[in-house]
Amino acid sequence: MRLILASTSPARLSVLRGAGIEPVCFAPEVDEDAEVRARETEIGRALTAPELTEYLGRLKAEDVVRRHAADIAELGGGLVLGGDSMFLLDGEVLGKPHVPDVALERSKQHRGKTGVLHSGHWLIDCTGLAAVAPAVGGVDTATVTLAADVTDAELAAYVETGEPLKLAGGFAIDGLAGAFIERIEGAPSCVIGLSLPELRRLVRELGHDYTALWSGGSPVTA
Image (cartoon, rainbow, N blue to C red; front, top):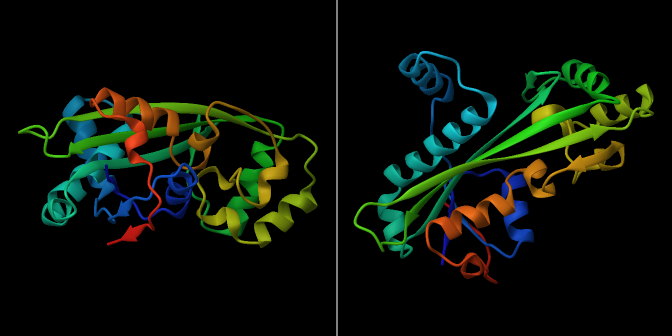
């Protein structure tokens, strides 16, 4: 059974490949800010961080299903996965730092503290077994504690590598900062990009065998 990933994120692809799943990848095209504003206007309140990650995952998956329906049919169908992640520290959402000064400031803020990582998922069943493609969503959460004894020099050296600039929260457990992360509570894959336990739960909820996603081929990016 084919998994179709509504993302070209190297981190998500790495997680899936490490778990024996070789997806076909399509890049979603979603105006996230506009869509979120519209959704919050519709419900009359701001989305919580977990709600936001699941909603963005849904938008990405639905966009790929809509724009790449013919490609998915040519592949013989599959399960389409969209996802999004959000890191919170002291209740504040910390997105990608983008610039070194912000990355360094955030790393110092995180030092000795525990942040919360929400990973949202939306899975659409395009296997053709149902007249209307069913879909399920879910959010997994993990906490990440940065060691209190990480020095300013170590943090500055890390920022200089450029690695944290495009990472939500500014750290990756599978990268250069792995030695700075003292403790993780929750699924490690959740912190990297997507939660494998949550994906398994959603696949099973749709009535499929998770192990049917295992394959030995090479990933295809469309």
